[in-house]
Image (cartoon, rainbow, N blue to C red; front, top):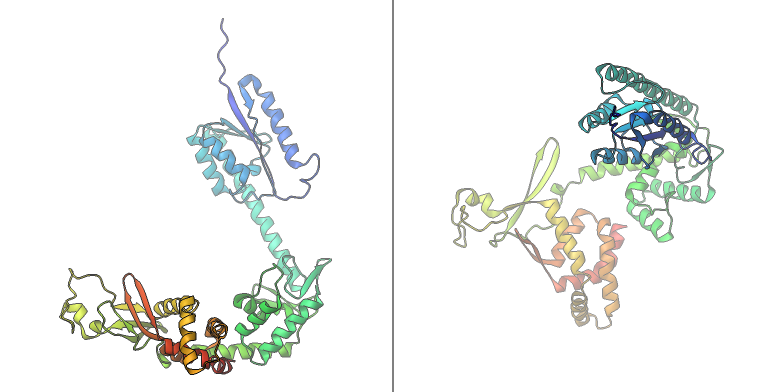
Amino acid sequence: MKKPIIRKLRCAVYTRKSSEEGLDMEFNSLDAQREACESYVASQRQEGWLLVPDRYDDGGFSGGTLERPALQRLLADIEAGKVDIVVCYKIDRLSRSLMDFAKLVEVFERKNVTFVSVTQHFSTTTSMGRLTLNMLLSFAQFEREVIGERIRDKFAASRKKGMWMGGWAPFGYDVKDRKLVINENEARCVRQIFEQMAKGGSVTRIVRDLTAEGVVNKYGKRFDKGKLYKLLNNSVYIGEAVHKGVSWPGEHDAIIPKALWDRVHAAMAENARTRANRTRAQTPALLKGLIFDSAGRAMSPTHTRRKQKLYRYYVSQSVIRGAARHGEADDAGGLHSADAAPAVHRVPAGDVEAAVFAQLRILLRQPEIIVATWRAARRQAPETTEAEVREALHQFNALWDELFPAEQARIVQLLVERIDIDVDGIDVRLRVDGLVHLVRDLADVERRAA
C-alpha cells in the first residue's frame, strides 16, 4: 500500500516586541518567541510543515500599525507565493488592531495562507476559528486602548505637577535627571531675544542677527521666523508646564520674568493688528501703471472681499470695458474670440508681484546689469566703483522684506520700466537710471526701514 503524498507547507515565523528594551541581550524576547514557534513547526513535520530560512522580526514596533519593516517584507513574500503558513507566538504579536488584522486575514485568504498562533490553537480556515480570532483580537485591541488611556492619564497628571515628560529640551534648557535645568549660554540668548522684542524689535532683524552670530537651536538648525515665533510663544520660559493648552506651574526655573513676557506679547499683538490693518488696498499697488497684457493693454489693480478676506488682482482694460467677454474690437483692432490666441486677462496680484520681484532679484545679480549701472552712475559720480554698485544691489535683496508696502511700490516704480505678461511668462524691463538712484538712495531707505 502506497503512502499518501504529503504536500510541503512553507512556514514563516513572525515575531514582534513593542519596545526596544532588552533587544541587545544575547537571548531576548524575539528569540524566545521564535524558539517556541520553531518547536511547534517541528512538531508538525509529519504534516509537511517546513520552516522558511528568512527571519521576520520586528523589534521596537507597536502592534497598532501595519507599518513595520519585517511585516511588510512578510506580506511581500506572501504576495509572491513564497509562504503557506504564518506562525506567531500569540495573535497580538501580529496585530493589536481588529481592523488591521481584518486586512491581513483578507490577504491570507486571497493567497490561501493559514495563520497559526502557537499558544492559542485555532485555524483561520474555519468559521469557528475566525470567530475565535475576532474575539481574541477584540480583547487585544481593548487592552491596547486601555494601556494608551492609562499612559495619557499619567502624562496629564505628571504635567499638572509641573514635571518634564521627555522629548527635546527647549532652547535655553538641558535635561538632567529627567528635569529641565537652565543652560546659561542659551538662556542669555533667549533673554536678549525677548528684550529686543519688548523694545519693538523686528523678528526679521533678530533672525538675521542670530544667523550672523552662528546661533543654532537644539536640532543644530539656524533660526528662521517660524522657529523664533515658536520660541517667543513657549511659556516654558516663564516656568510653566503646558498640557493641551492648559498651563501649570513647572518644576523648572524660569528664564525670563512674567512682566517681560507680557510686554513682548502685548507688542506682538499690536504689531499683528497693525499688519492686518495695513492691507494692499490702502497702499499703491506695486505694479500699477507698469503691467500690460499680451496685446499691450494696461492692466489695472482691483480687489474684492469674500468671507472677510481680501483678494487682489490685476485686470486687463479689455475685461473692464467688456471687450474680452463679448469679442468686441479693441483699440489695436484685435478680437478676442474663441479662435484668437490665448491671452491673460486677469492675474492674482500677490502671485505676479512675487514673480516680478523674483525676476528683479535675478536681474540685479547679472554682471551686465551691474556693469551698466556702474557706467551710468559714473556719469554723475565718477568716484563710484563697481564693487560699491555690486554691494548696493546685493544689499537690496536683504532689505526688501523690511520695507513697508508704500516704500516697496516706490522702489518698483523707480526700477521697472515695463512688465509684459502672457501665457508663456513675464518679461521685466529695467530702468538703468532708476538703478543709479537706487544705489544712491539705498542707505536712506535702510534707515527708514530700521
